[in-house]
Length: 117
Image 1 (cartoon, helix red, strand yellow):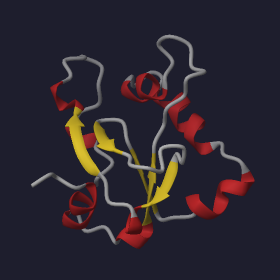
Image 2 (cartoon, rainbow, N blue to C red):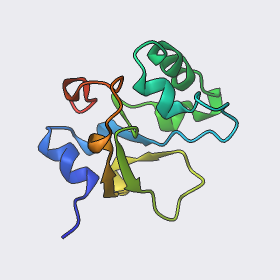
Image 3 (cartoon, rainbow, N blue to C red):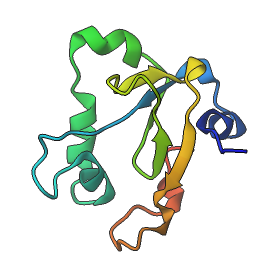
Image 4 (spheres, rainbow, N blue to C red):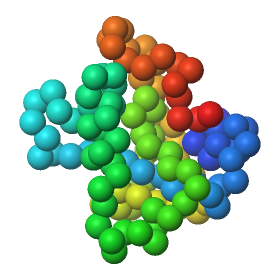
């Protein structure tokens, strides 16, 4: 049976209605400046926070949530809504396909810095 992301959220005590799923993928990024690379380096983490905090006003409704689940350490099967970079967790369970835990990068965040509390 596949591991589902909403199962992880619920086991961590999150109400799915309070969570938005956010996928960062930016093909415009220069080499070494992708959202994942900014997030995984403590020196550039503030730039990642700035990147994800600046959004168009028209997206305010979907992003208005208590929690954002931003995918950086975990790969999921996003599903047929591949063009949507933000989705409601409550109606969009995602299959976990890969964890980046096996990454050997020395500058990656510690596991206790996980966004899942």
